[in-house]
Image 1: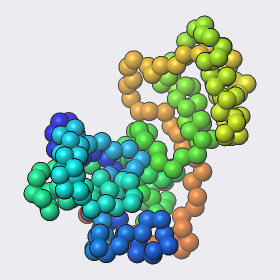
Image 2: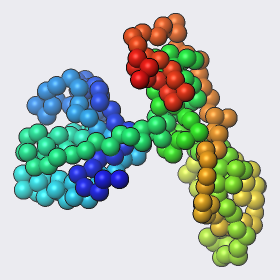
Image 3: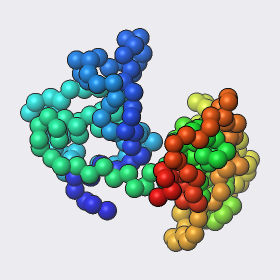
Length: 238
């Protein structure tokens, strides 16, 4: 992967600007006058090469950037100012791993959910956005069952054991109760977890862990030249 001037993630190229002053995501026209934000990597996961991080920090200390009160949007806004307003850098938007993001925790295709199936779960998903604790534990259990994680039975101080930690978490989140009494796949004695050193083929199927709602009312007809191929939706079949 390119090691400099790189901004990686699942990008939003058409993020709408909120003008309602009562909304926590409100952005004034003085900060950004257009109706669409500059491209930004959505907050499920993103990465930026260290040269850009340092350059943004240096430029902001010398002459503060304009700020947007939306975390993930702000990174793209800093990049835009760095490139277009200050002519200080050239940046590559690395969106080639977008298929690895599930920005909506459901399983669908453009055939089943026309115009309502953006970056769903698939057997190559790395990152799932907007997932509940219950969904995450179900996905973890599926990974365990498939052998993606390895569990070793080791002796540790009880105060740092997994079951003890889960009991502490119960004070803050009652939903973790499902992880007790072995339902998490851990049982009471295994206490060390590691990722399998090598993994070949598709990742475990996680569709059973999510609820896929029906297509939105009216099931809008497919428009334009978008076609569903084995590799995903494509315009004009190319």
